Length: 244
Image (cartoon, rainbow, N blue to C red; front, side):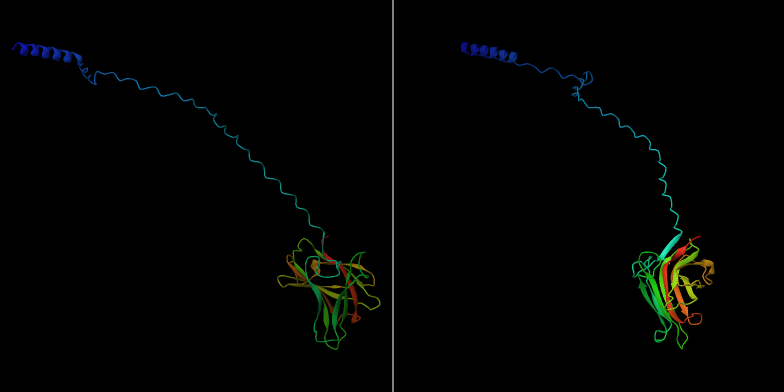
């Protein structure tokens, strides 16, 4: 019995010691009474400050560049000087001789280039050997394309002409101008001699043509009715348009 009591005492002492070694958790505080802790300060980041872009100054409108001054048209447009001794003419046009009736061997015009009979020192002249001495009605001559050139700035046709004294030459020949509208203007050259002579024919003398804005063709006509003699040779050089 005594031993049982001693054992109970030892057990009580042990329980007391164990209870003293345990710590109670502090009572939880109500959220209402708790003071919120400040959040941890974010680390300070240094940012390089870029200067604000400077707005460009408002550009002032520059005056438009002055257009180059228009050069006045030359007072003369050379259409054919024949200096190359071949085709085309000075404005890129073709040319040649023509006959009323190619099947009539008794009449016709033959074209060539002459380096000896020319107006000026260089190049050639156009040589036209004509023949209208035929038992049939005859006329023939020379044609030249003008390339639809605008001749409204000019007011006359100009050229140089010479007759061959040895072969003979006509006292009169007809020239024609044609335009894109189909109008045909006709005039006559009568100042032909054995020396080079300038010829000027006013546009107003070309009866039948009114519009000179698109010229297509120049023609020389030898007619049996006015050609005396009926066979001969003429030289033509420096043909073109001019303005007074």
